[in-house]
Each structure stands twice: as structure tokens, then as C-alpha cells.
Image (cartoon, rainbow, N blue to C red; front, side, top):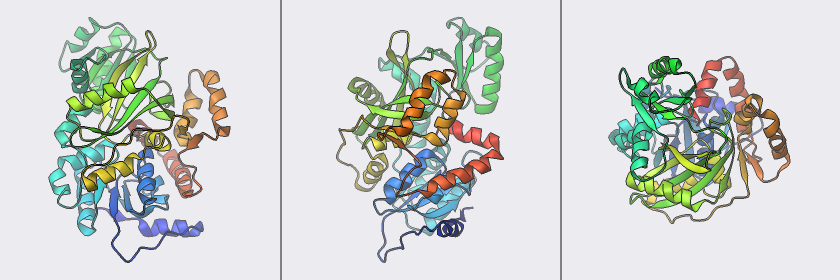
Length: 419
């Protein structure tokens, strides 16, 4: 069950000369946020905490970045939602029963799906501003979402589900090498494999299926074109509360991973394409719709829908769209005035540790190094962890990095989730 880590965190903060605001006499608004180690988790904690909301954060790692934030009023260690889903839900339900919470916000896919499966029980205690589990899983299934996009007239990579013997050979008869093998449902870049030899496709499918579940084989969209994400929040009528198009300037893994440096851009046509797809899905809540630019013709190709608050949430935040606050208001009030404008002159950088790893492993290191170093001196480039108002998450990141240094497999898993 959940273990209260608040006192140990308080001692660390006090030792560093930091103090948290004392509780007020009246009962303030309170929110439970999962996955405090994730990038998005920290953004949510800061966004809501800055507005006076009491934030309790959970994670399965005791040394989690979000636990060090001045806006994290309480830290709770829970079982890992990926490995012990039932125990994770039990711990969250116990916490929700012990204290009043206005809203619960799961961050990573495993936490979202685990709580969505028990949505009725969760909603006995608090608000859960996400769709039912079946709808979330359909969107998360890359095979199903690609078929939905194709029916909407959106360009998609040719995709084949591998469900039995002969399916891989049938796909190869229609596709040119190389091909992409990936799980139908996965986090970030976990399980994605580029396969160039026909005799390797079957074995790779078997390995990915063993580790991640059912797989698909996709047409290879050559690297070289940028990836764009349309970050969206929709109300219960499937009308957009906000939609921000973000460009992935750099990623880790390079060319095909989560954002390590990103920037909001104006591309109304791409935003409309994403919104039309989500309307067809009768969407409610947050979602990120991913497109990759095909360098052969410069046109966007739909890749997937992430049915949650996305890992690169900081990118839209520095652009002036506060998605965590909008989601909270949507949960509390039922609707919110749409946000229609945002900045495009500010970049968001995830230096610790994605952008560091990006440069270290980039196949075109010399090409990207100049801008990578220039971003240190650009006042319009904002770093997630560097904050004068909330500096201690950087300390938490350093301590977490030491911990992960002793468990590199755990680090790879965390990075692969893209949160």
C-alpha cells in the first residue's frame, strides 16, 4: 500500500534551507498527481501548486523529481503501475479514501489505464477527467487509431497487424524494406524496431510480441522530416478547449523519440486535421496527436494518439497554454473558456537528461551541436528543471540519476515511457 514519504522529503528540504508554505485554516482545493518522476508530472505539480492548490504526488521511486518541488505538499510512494497494477490502484484508492481530493490526474499510460479500469470506484472519491478505459485503449491501439485516421481521409503509413503465421510474410509482400516493427500499444519508443533484412522481420516480431504484446508492421517513413505534435484538450462535447502544434526540434532517441527540445508553431491545417480525428473518436480530455513529416514530399503522416497529458507538456506551457490548469478547471466546472492564442518564439528544453543523451548519441552530432550549444545562451530557450522559484527538483534529478546509474535497465525503461 502507499507509504507516506512526506517527512523524509521535508528533512531533505530543510537541510537545503528551503521551507514550504504552512497549511491554511480553511480546506483548500487538493489534487492527486501520479508519476512524480516524469517530466509531465513535474509540470503538473508546479502548474497547480502555483495557483494555491494542495498537490499530493505519487511515484514508485522514493527519490522522484516531483517530490522535491516546493509545490508538492505531500509525497506518497506507491507500487509500480506497470508491474503491479492492482497494488497500485489499491494504494491510490486508499489515499483517496483517507483524504479529500477534488481531482486525480494520472500521468503515465500505465497509471491512466489502471485507474480507468476502476473508474467507477475512483469516482466515488474524486473527479477523474478522462474517458472510459475502452475508449482510451482503442485510441492507444496504433492499429485501430491508424485505421480510424485512414477512414477520416488522413494520410497514414501502410500498416499490417501481425496476428498469426504468415502475416509477416504478407506484410513484406506489400511493403518495401526497411520496415518498422512496433507494439500495437506501447509507451514512447518502447519496442520500436527498424528492420532492413527480410529474414529478420519474423524473429523481431516474435521478440517484440514477447516483450510488449501484439505487434504491427508499418511502412517506413524515412528519417529526415521533423515530427509535430498537436496537443489538445477537449470538453465533453468534443469541442477544443485548447490546441497547440509543437515541433520536435531534437529528440532522444535521435530522429525517432520523445522531445528533448521543442517549440510551439502555428499550423492551423495540421491542428484541424488532429481535431477532426478526435471528434470522430468522440474525445474528451487531453490527447496528443503525432505526425511525422515525410521528407520525400514534405507532407505530414499520422503516427499515433497519446490519450493523456504528454511528456513534452512543458513545451506548450512555455508557449502560454497551461493545460494542467485547464484540465483542472474542466474537471471542476464542466467547461472552460477556450484558449485560442499562444506564443511561438520560445523553445522548451529537456536538458536533464534527454537533450544530453540526444547530442551524445546523435548520428549527425556535428550538424546539431552548433544549435545545441547556442541554446544555452538563448534567453528564449527555457529549461524544465532550472527554476529560481522551484530549484530543488534539479537536486532531485541529480539524486535520481545516481540511483538510476546503479540500475541502468530502470533508466532505459523510464526514458522509453516518454513521460
